Length: 150
Image (cartoon, rainbow, N blue to C red; front, side, top):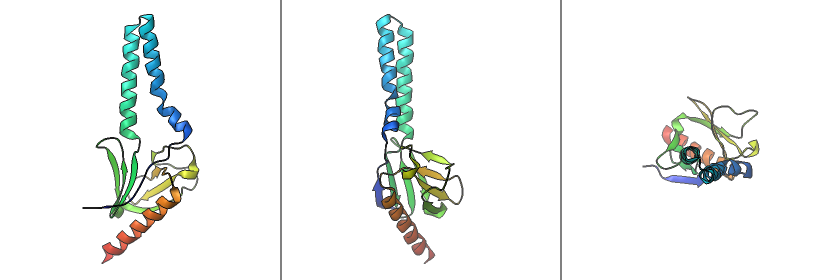
């Protein structure tokens, strides 16, 4: 069983938090539709709000975890995205445009970490402290490589 070597929260910037507040406007519009007697419109707005909450809850990262032999992005509930160290080539600051699987919580490229996989697309994340995260991930990856050769 792997143990957690390092864990960090994602950094959510102000603009991204504004996007996360978007369902509040659908609730307000739903209340407005109820006020003017448009029950079907209100039900549609409330249903849209529930759908947005469910999607946001399921896909936005809660934690970035570094284990002894893998890297894991903990999403909502039982959902997660895992990269085993056997498939992890490197972790670095991105160079230029970043394409791949994005778990952004920040719109600044200054905070992004790019996980380069041997097979599959790159994975882009935004930890709170990029330098400390990179240091811990690269150390755990080096330790895993050293122990797996023995």
